[in-house]
Structures are given as structure tokens and as C-alpha cells.
Amino acid sequence: MATIPVINPRLIVHSSVLAACALAALFLLQCGSGVGSAIFVMEPLPYSQDALAPAISADTMGFHYNKHYAGYVKKANELTKGIGFSGRSAEAVIQMTAGDASKAAVFNNAAQAWNHAYFFKCLKPGGGGAPEGLLAEMIDESFGGFTDFKKLFITAAKDQFGSGWVWLVLDEGKLAVVTGANADTPLAHGLIPLFTVDVWEHAYYLDYQNRRVDFVKSVLDNLANWDFVADQLEKAQPSKE
Ligand SMILES: [Fe+2]
Image (tube, rainbow, N blue to C red; front, top):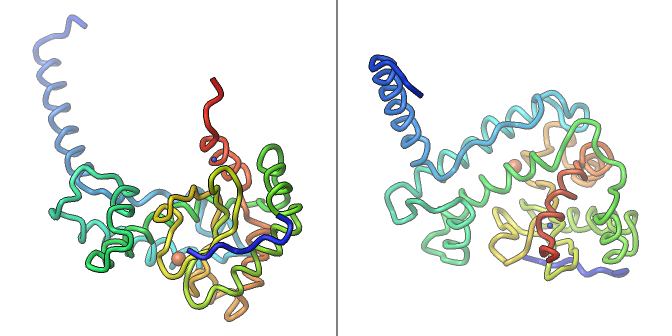
């Protein structure tokens, strides 16, 4: 992953009822085992498909969620079925296959499934603005201020050659902006993801055509879910005991 240099610098029950309960439990167990066999689960979109318009149209979100994201989840499950990944988490599959050319297809689909679920959570209707609290303090400390962070993030998005992702990550206790090509993900590099924007063309082309910078600016100004990002940063902080 490319780190972007920073200029300024987380009961008594009747037997028949009991029998019914037992049958229900068996049914649930069977259903559960079916769900449990799939490592990658399609996470629900946290808002309606048209909720982010006009920054991201319902058409773009519909294709992005129902076709691209769904495709990665489906393929990741197909590729990990019965070949030694049983019981592993999505994150573990990504880390187990990162950098292994013989497992590139598994990594690409697994990472894309994970990246997309994370990206959708980084957005919300009526988002944008500036973060507050610890996140704001760390952005000031790491980048010199929120305006400088935005400039760095947008430049990183512009300079990412071809398809990929731009991330705000936590790297050994400090914030950093990094980019990754194609399916690359901070999880493969020991970095803690905080915020991301998908800069694959499918994320913006219907709405912005070739104007990637306008798309990223619009996400930062109108959709960024800094509350979610702040929660991730909080979770990543070492416990104070
Ligand atoms: Fe995407």
C-alpha cells in the first residue's frame, strides 16, 4: 500500500409444546448451519439506495451494492468453500491470502467484499462537515488540520492510478492516508482502517464520468460518516487500565 507523505504532519412446559420447541430449535440450527457455512455475508446497506443522492445517485448505489458488492461476496464464498478456510473470519481469509499469488482470486474477492461493506458504512445521508473530539485532534496532529487532511486525501485519490481505494488509517497510533490498487486493503498491511472512499470507476462514473476528484470532494463534503469513523478510532484505542 502506498503511504501518502504528510507535509504537516480506532419452564413447566407441556410435552407437545416442548416437542414444538425442539422442532423449532432443530429448524433454527439447520438454518444457522447454512448461514454459518458462508464466510462472507452480504451486509445490509445502512440507508436506502436513493438516500445519498445527489452526491451518489440511486442508480450508482443500486449497481454498486446489488451488482458489484453482491458479486464479490458471492464469488468470495464460492472460492473459499471447502479449501481450508472453514471457520475462518473474512478478515482472516484476507490476511491468509494477502501476497500469495496462488491465492490472488480469493484475496481479490474477499478483500473487495470486505472493503465494500466498510465503504458503505463510511457514508450517511447528511454527512460531511468536520469531525469532532479525538478524531479531530488526531487529524490536526497528523495532518496539520482538517483542511490539509482533505487536500491530502483528495490528491491521493487523484493520483491513484487505475482502480483502487483511498484510506484514512491508524498506523502505530498515528493517522495516515494510504492508497491501494484494485482490491488492496489495510487489513493486509497491519494497518487499522478508519475511513475509505472507493475510487473504482463503478463507484462514480454514472454520476461524475471521469471527474473522480469531484466525486471524492462530494463524498467528503456531503456523505462522510465521521461518527462511524470516530467509533472505529475509539475501538482501536488501547484500553486504559
Ligand atoms: Fe466498488
